[in-house]
Image (tube, rainbow, N blue to C red; front, side, top):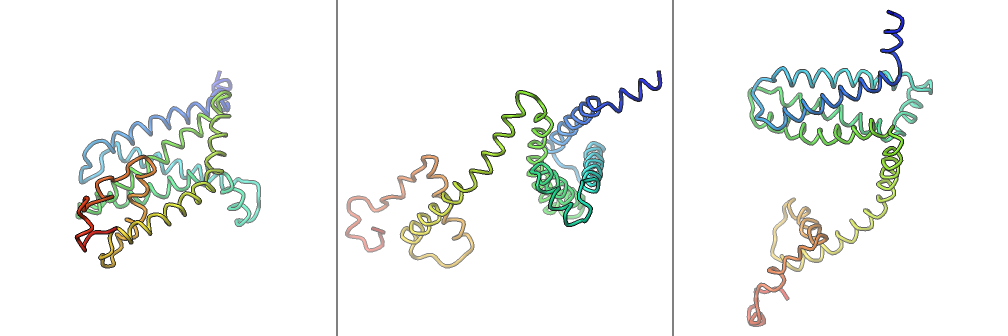
Length: 221
């Protein structure tokens, strides 16, 4: 009986479902801590989430050390050639940064910054759920295809970014000729052109002078 129980718990299917169920519990607890007000001191649920991430990080480190190459440099090249390993590493590192800032009990602004980082960090963990789903015989191929499509979209995004930057720079310079230098100008170059991609044309700013604009020297033509 003891032998059968041991074989049951070490079976790959049992290990997979145990990790998957616990990961779903972790996501639920993490979402709950993000949706409510953040107290000054971490709650026991936040410590549970922290303990899970620590355990996940140790398992991730074990996988790295047990990878096939012998040298560290080769291990890094081999290990981070897999997209899911990169995503998991970013998720773990950003979580520890956010949780470290969240522990500051004296400065509310630092605590708020930690909460924002943790909220953004939850995106990585949510996407990580697809890694568990990818073993499904029907959904797995779609996830693989979507990942490859995203990689191929990089070239299209670069072309789109260059076009947006060229248009945004000319638009910002012509529409606002009397601006003084500040860092928000770099944001404004891409800010409105980005929303124009979705159909927002800012029609009210196209002709602010009306039909009588030719008589006003302050108007932009």
